[in-house]
Length: 223
Length: 82
Image (cartoon, rainbow over all chains, first blue to last red; front, side, top):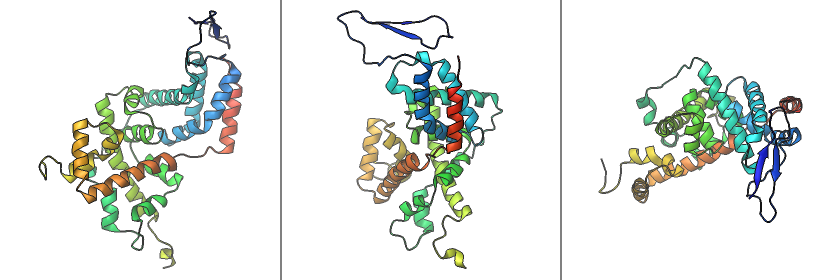
């Protein structure tokens, strides 16, 4: 049986020492030195994903959020068991930092009356309003009108309680149960927030497209 | 209330489509949704659009990191000390 022993003291950079008893094999988990260099390699490879996630969680302060997450991850690097899970582990730490910051802020919960958005259907609205009358692929064309920056603007219109679970589930691919754990919320609450968040997102996509001229077809601006 | 025996209304089906795609509905409810979809063309359209919107979100909402921001992060990581 293999034994993994940690060196005592948090100031040591190299924290893992692996003792292998002859005749046995290591577990599936890859264990390597938790050096500053290996953390740098991991962090550098995930910078893009972390920054993108931070920009979805916050309208301002994404850089500070990423830096705080990197600092916290570095200090906890010894606890990472599975190298393959490292990207998700870093994202989870970033969400934890965000959650802590959220608790400190006075949360203004912008609760749109449920009835107003409960029955909204972007699919049906597009058919009814027909913004691109000459299109054979109306719904597809509507989505293609949105740039990544437009999508972010729409996401930022959503209150935190809807935007955060929505982004974690449908952009970063976290399972619903894991989101509940990360946000310290009951699973039922997350499911309800996801449902309302989806409706709110669809509704805001339509409003945003109308307000910013995304629905204008070529030639419409010529007067 | 069901519009046909053993099935569900369009509004109920549409409300549960994303949960159906997320596989967070019970097997019984999943079966009822599929039964509804088997005869309701409009809800099939809703389902296809839900799939497209999910794929769109996963792809289009991901932003590139600006080079100057990346450089600042790399500098920050390089200076980390315990």
